[in-house]
Amino acid sequence: MAGLAASVAGLVAPTAAAAPGGDRLVFLIPGQEPVPGTLALDMYKDMDARLTGLGYKVVLVPTGGLDLVRESYVVKDAVDNATRGANVESIALVGHSYGALSARNYIRALGGVDVVDTYISIGAPQYGTPGGCFQLPGSGFDGCPVTPFINSLNTGDDTPGNINYYSIRGTTEPVDGRLDGGQCRMTPVPDVNHLSEVADPRVIDLTVSALQGNCVGTFVNDPDGSISVGQTLLPGPN
Figure 1 (cartoon, rainbow, N blue to C red):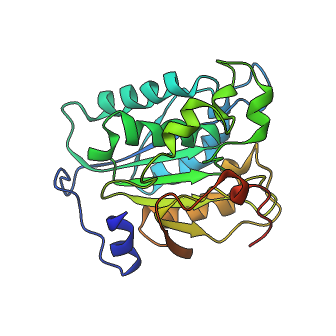
Figure 2: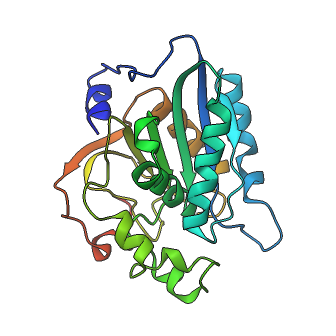
């Protein structure tokens, strides 16, 4: 939270663990498969290529947006494996939809708060989505607003640590991805499809801007506990 406030002022400071000149790691964490049997990771091909071309070391994390508790550990394992014995300058998590929830749970509950520098959510139902209530346990139900997972995820400070938090969404998104505490809410992207938004060039541009420490939108610092699920639903274009 403190880190993003500094970045808005153009004063991004590396964390104590940062090693200038080391790997700038970006972990791409997908949501649910758009069609059963397909790979949501495929949607990240263009973003992967763009970030790799800019010198980032990209790691694709094989989550499926089904069991969000288990997939939080998948994120942790991916970060642990990529950083073990490596010279690391920075760590960023880019999560789409349910993938952003597993990534944030890793930050809050599994030690990620001590190692992550930047957290970028894309189309994320941070306070849950009613659609999750119609899915089975282990198959997306964790995203229902009344589940223990969502309640735990949003108890206390939503944006802990010295981490830059960003939210990217489309204007027709069913949820707005807001968090309490310090967060940059990027200007919503018009006419972007939720399922394929990580492949949209405009979303990729905003992701690059966030990784570079630029808040292309509004930096907000809502009080802890001030957000309810009802406030986040059907947000509209603003």
